[in-house]
Each structure stands twice: as C-alpha cells, then as structure tokens.
Length: 264
Image 1 (cartoon, rainbow, N blue to C red):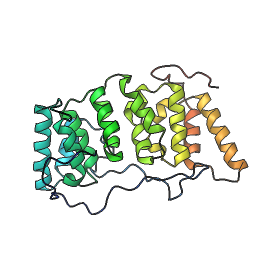
Image 2 (cartoon, rainbow, N blue to C red):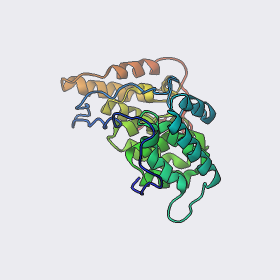
Image 3 (cartoon, rainbow, N blue to C red):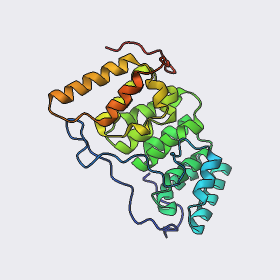
C-alpha cells in the first residue's frame, strides 16, 4: 500500500530479510530461479493463515512476536474493531496493513494482516479495495483472509486476478480454502494447471484430494500436458503424477458451482 504510515517508523520486530521475490517462469512455464518452496510455516502450525480459525491464529502469532510487536498488534486489532469503516480517504486499519511487515517481521506479516482484516470485519468490497490498492504482500494476505470473511463466491474475482499473475506467492495463496470452496470445476482445474506451469507445489491447493478424485477431465488435461512436455524433451513435474494418481481413485466429487463437465 502506498499510503503514508500513521505511526513512527522505528521497527519493533527484528526482520532480517524481506519476503522472497516471486519466482519468474520461463516461457515454457518452468521457474527460472528454482521451484517455489513448500508452504512456509513460520507459526509452527502446519498450515497457513487461511486454514486456521482467527482465535487460534492470534494465539499462535502472539507466542512468536516480540513484546513490542505484540503490543503493536493488540493496538492495531483494537483500532480495526473500533473503527472498521473509512474516515476520510482510507480506513485506519488499511494503514496498519501497510505497517505489519515492519512491525511484526516478514515471517509473521501475513498472519498479522489476516487478523487485522478479520478485526475490521472487512466485507467483499473492503477486501477488493485493499487488494487493488495493496502491495503483493498485502494482496496475499487478502487472499488468505477470504475464507474467514466472505461466505459466498463474491470475492472470486480476486482469486481469478491472482491466478492470472506469474507471482507464485499470489498463485499459492489463491488456491487456498476459498478457491476450493467456490471455484467451479473448469476454473479449479485450470488453477491447478497454473500451479504446475509456475512450479507452485500442489500442497498449496486446499482440498486437493476431494476435488481431484475421479475427475476424468482433469486426468485428460494432465496427461496431455505431460505428453507435450515429454515431446519437447522437458521434465514432467512430479506433482503432476501425484495429482494424476488422485484422479484415478474413488467417486467423483462435484465442484461447488458445477459438476465436472467436459471442457473445450
């Protein structure tokens, strides 16, 4: 977010490195600077902020912040809860989103931002504004917050926008629980293929086993993609074989918006 901070700039946490830069794919879809790592777990919870209930997320985060960062976060959450609306051109909680990386450190900024969004009770319109005006890091936090704040498919345009990018951090966040819950079968399949194209591990895809189970159209798409890469002398991603195996088991699970229909 490009808005000026509303509080002093002295760091309270002790971050030593910025968030990793996005992996840029080569023209054939292969990441040029290494495969995106498996989901980071700075909170030691075995999951991402999108999967943890806000109360559990706040507890896990508080245990890992410095005292000064905890004090800042408590104040930011109180502010967001008390003043969720805009006062002038921008809401106070939007300023706090911009500060979170410096105050809580890059490893914990996603969680802090998700908690601020939840405290502000941000609806789809507010989340869209925060996404459109935010930095890539802030956009990622908005995507993580969607399953906590938007009960229906109204925020799918944000997921679709993230999936159109080549920022692997945004792609990874886009295929979380909200996408698993609301993307139709056609869009979900292409989201999974985007992960394979850009080197995002399919471990990021929420509810993968259920949505891939007995999906013959997904199996066809994966087989065609593998054949294309083999014919071009390129390596077939190991994750492709993993997902293909999932399509061969069980009974098809229909998507949230449409059954698994044949695609053109």
